Amino acid sequence: MDLWNRLKNADKPIVLYGMGDGGDKIIKVLESYGVSVSGVFASDGFVKKKLFHGMPLMTYAEALDAFGDMIVLVAFGTAIKDVLDNVRRIASEQELYVPDVPVAGSTLFNEGFVKENADKLRFVFDRLATERDRFVFENLVRYKLSGKAEYLYAAEDTKERTYSLLSPGNDEVYVDCGAFTGDTVAEFTGVAGGYRAVYAIEPDGRTFRKLCANTEGMENVHLFNAAVSDKEGFTSFSALGSRGSKQTERGVEIPTVSVDGILGGKEATFIKMDVEGMEGAAINGATHTIKTHRPKMFLSCYHRSEDLFDIPMRVLNIRDDYKIHIVHYPCLPAWDTAFIFV
Image 1 (cartoon, rainbow, N blue to C red):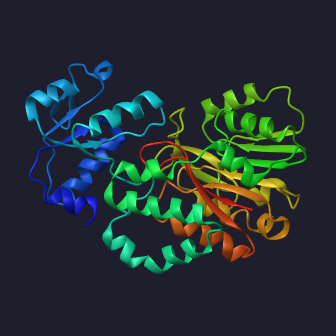
Image 2 (cartoon, rainbow, N blue to C red):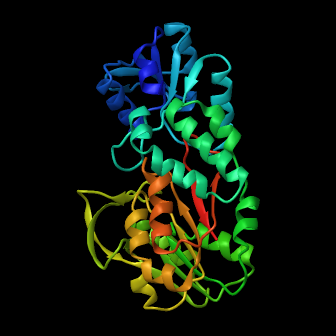
Image 3 (cartoon, rainbow, N blue to C red):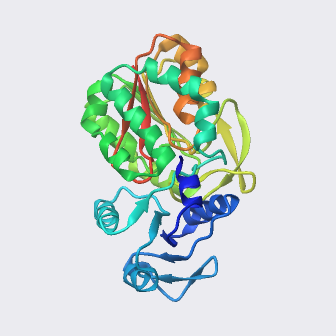
């Protein structure tokens, strides 16, 4: 039984921990299952006189007084240790779940989804390079179905494992799709000990200005204020000045570029993609580069429910000689998860 059907049969009040976009999505799914939320609480510093979906925002202590024994649903994402520790503390006192609702798209990772895509999930599972990768993948699937954080805890990896798999050197041509403020450019070039060239693409205007400032003085760095896609053109974009900025049906119009287009046939040795659910189109737009140069790749796979099979299958359809790994860094829900292709 998946989390949503479990909640449908719950005999305790269901209370959200957190609000915002995550809370909106969880409430929408619960309503589709005929399940109602009894209340919402937040960390003490965030509690003010405000309402969320008509419910007064409480502290955890107030929620305890109001509901006693309850089911807590974590409705935000975090990689901050103190917050993760607080989630563990609450989980030691209450029945707690971290629902998996997609960052992009609307397809739920539930029992029906797994049954429908069982062959694709099995195909990717069988293509993973090591027993560790298969363990991580299996725990991610179990988490997404159950909402149980312990599966994510078991799957946690370190950056050291990532870079031991990728083995970056100081002669890399690094393409950063979703470069944000340049933090990943700095991290990569620092670990690699240098670079031959950097191509960094960031669609959000405010964030792009920070990227420019943070890479100022670096030689052979090419910056693009655009969204990554499968072709050159334009798209609507929700510019939030944060990692949540993404392509949307409504928003400001910005240009799109493709990896193949910006490289113009030149080599890339390393590609990183974290583009808020547009990884599929971005991979398609890098077809020539992948087929011709076989770059190492670090591709985020946590935005859409389909990412766990769609991303590796797209890559293997271009070249079938990659070894595939999967890593998940400490984070709730299953964000900071990526496939590594070497």
